[in-house]
Image 1 (tube, one colour):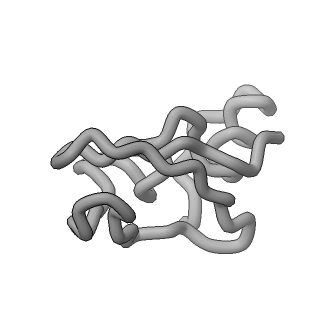
Image 2: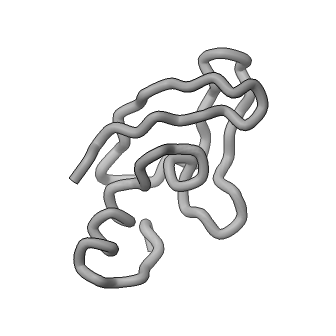
Image 3: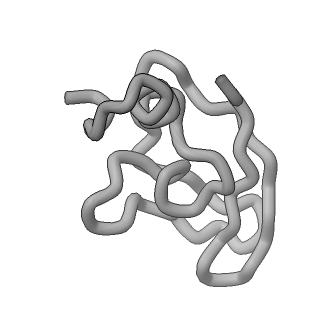
Length: 73
């Protein structure tokens, strides 16, 4: 399981590598480059699933086990 993901801000294009929480979804993220507050896109559980190059740990686990499931629920 990968615990870091590079988040790309849709507003400014800035990229920051962040460590993903393993026990909760991260619903908000403040862009380091332009201070925009990122929120998940419709249908995604967290900012990592919407803007990261690696989905969050619960989604990674579900895919590894052949399940289709959202995280945190």
